[in-house]
Image 1 (cartoon, one colour):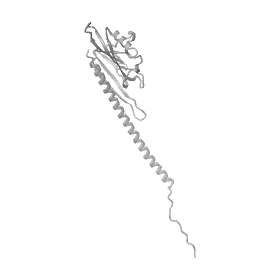
Image 2 (cartoon, rainbow, N blue to C red; image 1 turned 120 degrees about the horizontal axis):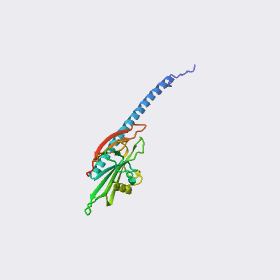
Image 3 (cartoon, rainbow, N blue to C red; image 1 turned 60 degrees about the vertical axis):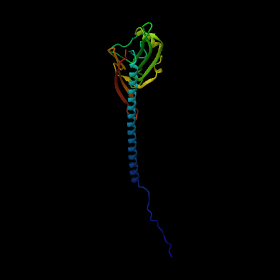
Image 4 (cartoon, one colour; image 1 turned 90 degrees about the vertical axis):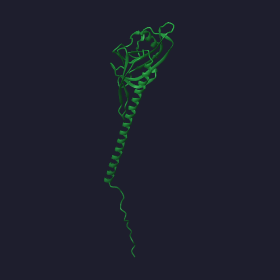
Amino acid sequence: MHPRTFRSHRTSAAFTYAELLMATFVMGLVVATAVGFLLFSLRVYGFDSGRMQVNRDVRKITQRMMTDTAYASAADIFADYATRGTNHVTAAIGAGAAGNMLVLTYCDSSPTTGFVTVNKLIAYYLVPSGSPAYTGPIRRFETVINPAVQLTDIYALCDLLDDHLPSQAGANPTIVQLAKGNAGTNQLFYNYMDRSVMVKAKIYQVGSVLHQGVISTYNFTISPRG
């Protein structure tokens, strides 16, 4: 009797080199497509978020300035926060010119003397310091003058600013994160015929490697009640 010999009928389950290459290629295409879609989605999301933030900034400063100006007695434009008429070197900007600082004055007439007295000051200003060039935050300053001070001329207003404004421009709260003046040579406020103030600005939302930045140009006019 001869012993029986049993042979396996199973075939090899290993992939060939060509099959491995094809599988790797297909997997690479799937990953590249997924990454591309993800980056596109992030760019769209970043752009939409930036546009919404710019719109919020525009609404915020417009509503705030319109409310402040409605009750102001006068509006004066100065070249910038640093000079602002300091030591009477420069006074307010005249008609047809522009500057980066707006000062709103709130006045009353004294019932005893009849003199005009100042009881509050509000200022908006842009200090260019960032990138892109000529951009920076728009800040707001407010102070109550108590007791009220007699206002005789523009130089008396300069003295009030020197007495009450912080020495550092960054000490005051930010209204808009990043903006650039669009009047004159990159100024924010334009004196229109000594009757009103035109606010001309570009509001920025800086982009990144994932999405492009957003820029919105806007203009509006404010007039104190006088």
